[in-house]
Length: 130
Image (cartoon, rainbow, N blue to C red; front, top):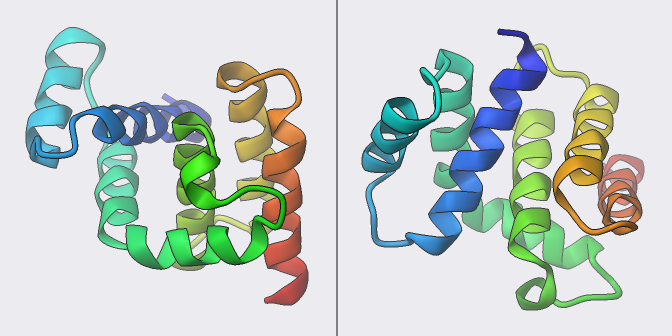
């Protein structure tokens, strides 16, 4: 399994967590492993660490989202943004450009038609002001 596929696992788990807020992360991971595919170590780490830093990541998203308040951003886009920011800030070995590119690709696959531009804009603004 390549890094993009592992990242996609983390995204799916983060998106699921949006709908099952009270369910423990471990239970979501088990359901995924039993019903979809074995969960990679990186997918698990990225999922859990993104959850751990969620409030901080949401503050960054809110700061750079000038056109939409955070509660108006679709859940899938929030999950993509959180994961990309987690990788940029906390994940060793993931260059910012790679995190942005992967986020854009995930948005093209899972989000609305032009949502990748919104995601690219927020992440680009964060990088420029970092």
